[in-house]
Amino acid sequence: MTLAWTRRRVLGLIAAAPAAALPRTARATGARVVIVGGGFGGSATAREIKRLAPEIQVTLVALDRTFVCCPGSNAVIGGFGRIEDQTVGYDALVREGIAVVTGKADAVDTSSRKVRLTDRTVLPYEKLVLSPGIGFHWDEVEGVSAATVRKVPHAWQAGEQTVQLRRQLEAMRDGGVFALVAPVGPLRCPPAVGERVSLVAHYFKTAKPRSKIVVFDAKSKFALQDLFEEAWADLYPGMIEYRLAESEGIVRAIDPENRIVSTDFDDVTADVINFIPRQRAADIALASGAADETGWCPVDPATFASSRLPHVHVIGDAAFVPPLPKAAATAVSVADTCAKAVVRDLTGAATADPRWHAGCFSLAAPRHGFEASTDFRLSDGRIAVDEATMRRTLVGASVDARQTGADKAEQWLRGIMDKVWG
Image (cartoon, rainbow, N blue to C red; front, side):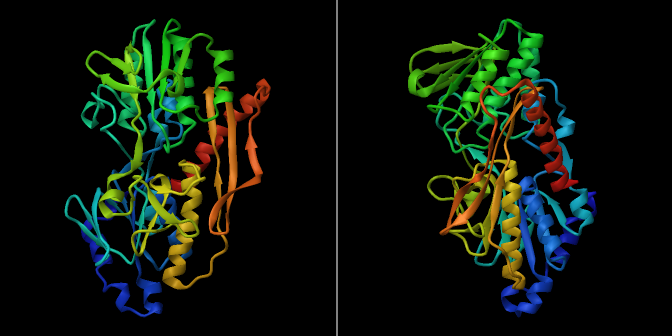
């Protein structure tokens, strides 16, 4: 149980003198690493650091005592997944000697190397890893804000919002309209937009067959478009209207009370609206100064050390390292690189050249899945696609291949959750 690690105990463990005043041998045995963010990237980094160097004191700051995984949450919205199956705890990390503190970081003092939480807890560090996930731009579409999410959920951070959107769909009349408003990138898990549309369509097909879906996408194309469009034509003919900004205009306003989406050209009344705002790094990344004017955090791709802050690394969705996608598999792969870099700096251990994997498995229906995965490598200081490792389901794939894709999606999800928290 994470409760075994009280704040008093954590602060007692990390109250030693700053590492800057200690020789390297002492730093190797008493160094303190604080990791902000208990999702895929942060949790995987904590475990890998502890595995590589058990003597390092690792503190993980998690928002809650449990974490709800975004991959797989569209199945909950589609009615054939359970939120309980998406929810994990930190017991395995605690058993490995990682101190798990529940709270929210709101400030970083890089000169004294301290992280402050909203409850005024202060955590000193020699190395800080920020893996806080995403935040949202709330000032770009009139009528919606952080205060309207109970009426117009985004469900792009899994948990309460996921369940809320599912309940709205359940309460919707047969013959109603579900409107999804998607942003420009960069965004967390780009294929998840098409997957969500698909799995809501699956629910409508089985429970509310006269209902319609209208998608307002601020982009000119969307991830895995050919595979999703092929699936929609086969599985949900006539149910999905997908409007791209290039030809259909941009959403300018949303009326949460009357559930009206207003574009450059027309107004559409819906029964349920799923508004996904444009994304940025989470608040602590901005407050600490790790993010630049883009709203994302630039890093050294070889180590994921912050380009703006000393002794700080940034990983996961908050980091900006194209062409790596913002996805769970990427975060876990990057966590390995980050952990090795942190341990190297604190102990002098050698590290190999980094490589990364981005595995993407999407569903168009419970038995219809596809894959778009690849590896990446470091080339002349930049991240490059390893084209020889690219794997992508082809348009026109057989029924058996689609079933295999769906099976792989489930196996991948359970496997990565077990790797990080099991």
